[in-house]
Image (cartoon, rainbow, N blue to C red; front, side, top):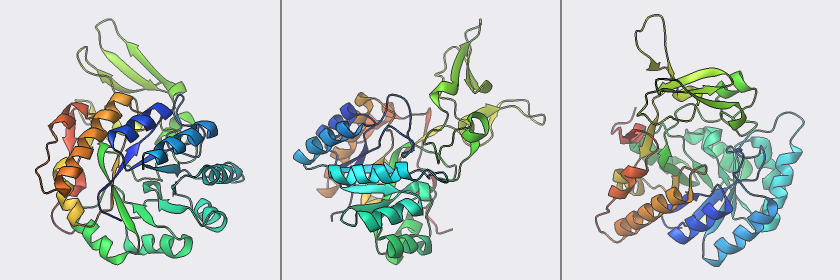
Amino acid sequence: MSLAELICPAGTPAALRTAVDAGADAVYCGFQDATNARNFPGLNFTPDELAEAVIYAHAKGTKVLLALNTYPPAGKVDLWRQAADTGARLGIDAFIVADMGVADYIAQTHPQVRLHLSVQAAASSPEAIRYYCENFGVKRVVLPRILTIPEIKQVRKEIPCEIETFIFGNHGLMVEGRCSLTNYLTGQSTNMDGVCSPASDVEYKRDADGTMSSQLAGFTIDCFGPDEKAGYPTICKGRYTAPHRSDAYYAFEEPVSLNLSRLLPELIDAGVHAFKIEGRQRSKSYVRGVVSAFRRAVDDIRAGRSADMADLVALTEGQKQTQGAFETKKWR
């Protein structure tokens, strides 16, 4: 396959059609249950909706990837198996999986469908990636957002599968597949229930002076001034006070947006097969703008032209943009 395949978010049927029309090479989506890591009300697909989406995407030459990227709790694996059976029956092009048991079931039951290893599996070393390839026939790995470009280039030389990297959207650095912060407050797990900060536990409160506080399960996660944009309350991106500090600070990570538009040529040179855009919870206009911009950029780079990515600045999720670990030049 060619390098720089564009993998785009599809949180709803409408967003999927938008991404396809904007030039996505592939779209990724999930069912309306705990089998995918964006299990929010109003998002995702019923089996009937996915059936129609597959027909629409395939008619325009776009692949459909189904995210089964959460971990089944003990004794509840049937939901994941049923989702795999349904996806295979509907003709999806690949499953994105994290759990070894789910990967094994698909490899044994639906060997004709490609397996992609989710970033939720947190496989970043050649040894770990080769294990999944050798035991489950994984064809592609989505790398965690902690590797430098030199590291990606080296990993590519040592593994027998394709590489996919995130290039735009959330810059979450909590270790994928291992975060239990939301479960601590809400009882629902990002990794098993597919939801970080469930909407039913989220509340915004405005004070008399115009300031806004965002709360999760009754706990204040952050406060915003009258002119600030209130962010969604996730524990890792909240601001907190501490006895040894006079200011509220980001104890885990600052809410910044990942934007690797300037590094696309270097990523292609490193052997990255697919670029992933994060944002299944975002609007159709966001999807249209980001996918269209990256479609033009990838096409320009392939044609040897200079890519213009100015339009993406207005679409970033946070106040700041970063290239994260990717921009580090040396091997650590």
